[in-house]
Image (cartoon, rainbow, N blue to C red; front, side, top):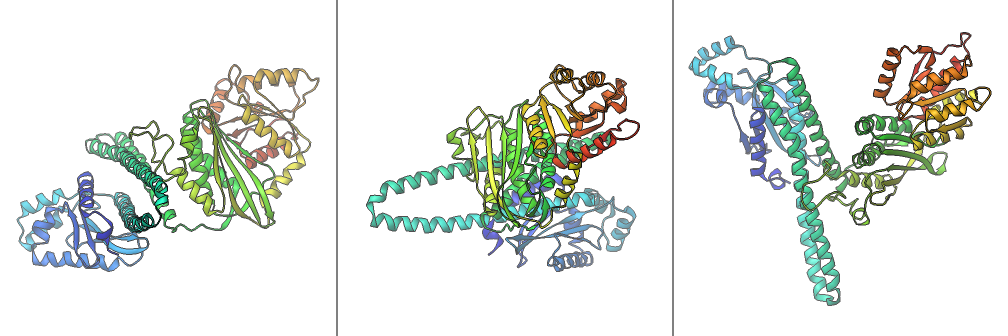
Length: 601
């Protein structure tokens, strides 16, 4: 297999020329026989001086030899400082684990060049000093971090191009074989003409979907690339350090988006050719859910969407499998749910033990439900197909960003875990994606033991005040399953009426959502404190990290005593955090002073 068989060299040369124009870095791609396939933007200090003079040319050859010798060392790329004073970099290009070509860049500096050194070099080799220093000034200066980022991007991009080329060759072979069989079958069975016509229509539809996908992918790739190009141009003219920092942040954000899209395409490529192997390691389900909350929570909060985790309290949490890929499935489903849900809606992530096969294995059942735009039956039939997306119209203009591979990757990962994935949805009424996966169980669940220790607090009564009915009900059911008495109401006013209806405080702990209409958490707590008097009822505020920061600041500004708020609980609420807070807060109630220091979870 040759690199030239997998890629369009002219297109790759244009890409390298664009890269050189954007960054100022030169490029060269050579096959393993040493044939130069691409060369762009070489600096004049090398082409007009170093590569011309016999003595300095020998140094250049030494640099090429050293870099070529290091390409099989297993490193992603190698850096060598040429004796002529510049830096060169070499990157091996691998496709499906096979070393096919080498990428070279260089002719730059890691710091501003030492002019005295190059003046001495000009005199030593008889160069015209003025012309030599003029070409020296044209060579760019990059930091090692910039070089690492450029090499990481180019290595991934070269791999992506090679993998797509390999897929293209496989597709050509498959199509050739398919055409042969179709011709043979057509000669033998005329009665199957209608079936072959249907297959042809489906193939054309798939080809149109793929073409549309490629057009969308091109558009999505151009968006961050344009951001990088335009911001880089602004950066060259920046004066202040703060302004430069902001533009660098924009470049980082665009690069991160680009890397995410490249990773999605590479993941799909590995899944298609069977090169993705699952890990089998010990992990805890709550860690997976915690990472999901960190990744999706800010997106949901930015759109004013309530993100809720509803995990069965009796589900085994000490599992064996691939936590990264399980988290990837949940991320793609939750990310889509947030993307297609309007502000003010909710996204609920659920998990339960579907079937416990034995002490060492179970079938985990998860779902992601949203109150979004829903999916029609026609769109549902396209959801898990490669290169198709439910919200994709005939043109490449779409309301939502992305290249439509998340659900395809999720489906293939679920199947790798011996599970199933399906969707229930009605257009305009939200969607519910569900899947099952088979996992192992750890012999001992130390977290379950810790949770059991919390139950020494039984019996305790809790009141949940949350204007989101789903969130409050989920928390109530979790607590009741563990044996606690729990009641959920939808507003501060209702909670106050509930307290007024009893002669003595009926609750040991009150969980109050920070953001509620009419009466917020602080107003609710103040009123309830006046009703319960000196009775030690712990009151905790729930909210996102940003909301809790605002709650603490407002409590301080309004002069509320710190002892009136027992703690702060971060939403979406995770079971381990809830139990830890309950243990700390309810145990602190027994202190002789009766005062409770705020606890953060």
